[in-house]
Length: 367
Image (cartoon, rainbow, N blue to C red; front, side, top):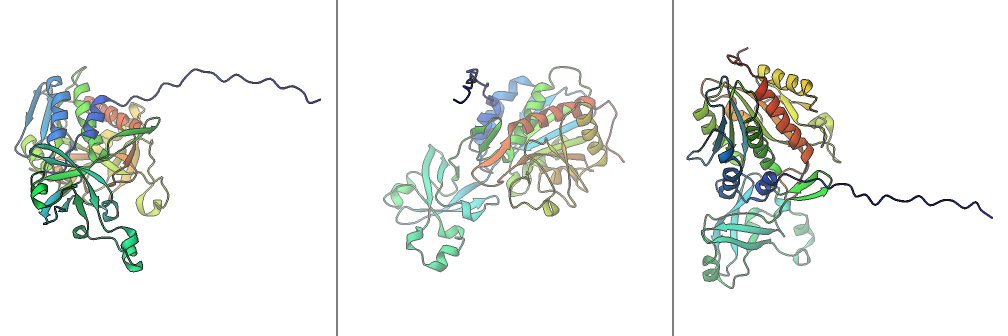
């Protein structure tokens, strides 16, 4: 007779679920296509305006939160609140709506999506459509459709009904909200760059407590996706001594990413610190030192040219600004389901706070 084995009892104690910060969740769910960042602006206003020493907006729609306004040196933190979107360009007689893209879209991702259109009368729900695969020939099935071959379907019966709902120039975003899928790993339509905007604004909120020599301004910038436009005016008006842009970067730990071409960066490995011509060496060394002193994980990226971020515009503003760049590792950039480990966002906030607190009066980025 086989030996009777005891059955191990499985503990009924549940692991506490990761809780995403409300500020971050609300910002991720805000609809803010580039040039129409109203909802994201409202979220930043709600969570930040009453938490900092001074707060202002400008004609580009940027938001500026300043802590210790009489401090020295002057540090600017920048993250953009705009996201990819669609802009309505034409409505046909049958009530189908045509559009152009706001920012750099992968056209294979556009059709078959639920979208929210921002109108003067509120949000209008719709879907993007194209000819069904059953109605295509073999050659058509291999093609990536051009933008004018995709449309937005409002469910309207004709042009008159469609025009009562939307107008030329209205913007839309994918109807895809934030969701945690495993521990602190989440997916959202626009981690690019609500993650960075949250990081700089949350850093400003935390810097209101404790010693701080520097003046620190966090800017939620607009229109980055069409040319870092908000950052241009933000850098000009603030004219800081130092600046750190925060954006997302490619996590290359997913299949089909060759590290020989793109570098090796892990989701959950901490913020990516950029090094190269777009980066002032003084602020780069300060970021690395702050990370190591505070035991904050980080990764280093080499970029041989001006980066595709707000850092590009800030570095050459005024007489030149000592600029650094932190990138939050992200998978599936510019798709409706971008993926980020929220621990990387938290470590980015901690690193920004550590760098800001390390600055001493009179320091500059001259080298």
